[in-house]
Length: 394
Image (spheres, rainbow, N blue to C red):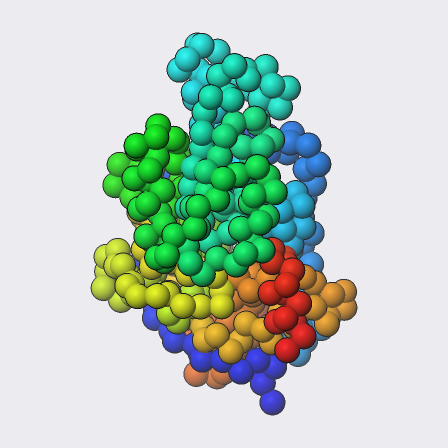
């Protein structure tokens, strides 16, 4: 009997540059050199420590693969999400830019942490729209560095996630629409009130800040490469919302490992599959509607512009996964040895890998077999403890 019951839809990417080197043009978006600078800054933050790379040996044996490497972001900086790396880093970069503009000084991270430019910083207000985790990172970064913060959330964001952002001093505004509508409202109000938008999605005319967000994510990839040692995974299954994380992972491994890079597989919810639909049509496509999914952090209908520039040539396969895999995969990890805390949006990549390996009609076209070494990122822990407990105890 299969470990997980779920439906996957598979779209191979006809635009994939499987054997090409990482293109020079994409290095303007993100590169290993830029990632090194981000690592130097973020590793100097208080309480920084690498997140663990867990080896799911029992599960690997059950589905007959050589290894499952699980990068566990469930405790990152106490925010319980990989997004702690991106939003807060972009906040720091924006504060440094404002200090430079207003005083001519090149403020370091140490300067920001020591409050040396508070006369400038405290007058700055950072804003964003969020499903929860990005906003928590932005709010935490604003509190850490001493500036104001206004966060917009959509109707489906849980009260627990709202309260987590408020705990960092953010003003949180809930709208009645979906995620993409909250993005538009945040941008409109920021223009009116002179706020700086720190978004994890890019669009025409707005690319620099999302680039910094994605560079923050590369810290966990640098850690993972050290933890993997000489072992290069054969497959990466990575969940996606707007595509920022997936693009950061794809670009980093592509430039680092070149032709030896893993097969790169993006996983989305069935109801919020903007990347898969974009691959089908060969251009960025917006998915309309409620985007209703238990995986709230992936409930995005519009592809990030910069992310698509990387993912269109870099992804090998696009998958969607049905909702019925989410809670069972969370339970599988929670009851494992050792137990792993994984939130609703953390498990899509792992669940898809399990289901695909156990389905011969998918395993063959995805190149999954007994020699496969799979890398996944558990992108969040129990970011809403009430929701988490309900799901793992179903």
